[in-house]
Amino acid sequence: MDNQNSYGTLYIVATPVGNLEDITFRALKILKQVDLIAAEDTRHSKRLLSHYDIGSPLISCHEHNEIKKIPQLITHLKNNLNIALICDAGTPSISDPGYKLVTAVAKEQISVIPIPGCSAAIAGLSVSGLPTDSFLFLGFLPKKQQKQKQALETIKNQTPTLIFYESPRRIKTLIENMLNIFGDRKACLAREITKIHEEYIRGMLSEILQKLNEKETIKGECSLFVQGQSEKKIIDQEDLEKIILDRLSTTDLGTSDLAGQISKEFKVSKKQVYGIILKLNQSGS
Image (cartoon, rainbow, N blue to C red; front, top):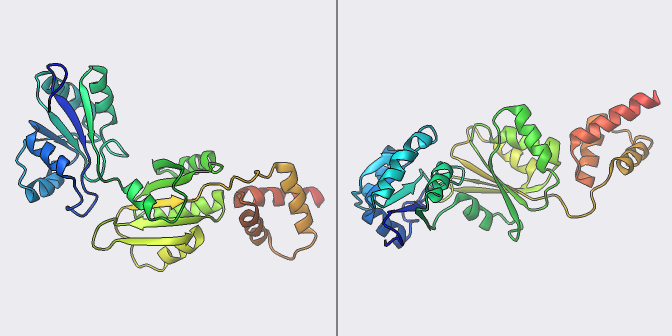
């Protein structure tokens, strides 16, 4: 663990997302050799460290104290101590603490080295059945409904596969919002990756939501993979209005059903189609 200057090195060490055997030999070597391990939750990390008989000293570094701990950790590094940063599961700084620390340490010209390993986003993507040549990781969207819907509106026309993290309590609401804004798309919900109750639900967003509604409870952190917008030309407002006018003159469907049909067919949001139908009905009355 030599450094080109007299400073120590900060190692960003990926740890298992569930199964404790999903850790690299190099990660175990680094965790045993460093002078200090900065962990998101020291109680949680002790399970992993105890399993592999790792006795390196622990210090907490989580979302609520990361900024306060940065000066202390930089001092240790400048005193030629080596530090490993780990989070509760997966790769630190990916929707977990670490980004601010890495930025501050790199600014001090101190070496920051990744120790690659598990990431729920990449593991789930590899078995999602969705395109993997291009993807956009979005992590956790805002919890408040209005801000979440705004975030979804800004990405609805993105063509790469979209990757989201969400809690089991809010996953159904997230999918419902996607259906209203994205329309129905191919998707894969990964739950409890590498754990005992590991589950993958593949299908259209509407089908995944139906299967979740059939469950009494939903447990475990969720990773949701959603197919991006088709690269076909996005229909403009004028053409969409012409299509809707034509359908209005030839269908007996109600406003909501018609909006859903057009939304799915032309890959535009149901909310947008619904609004146009109401506007056209008002102008024609």
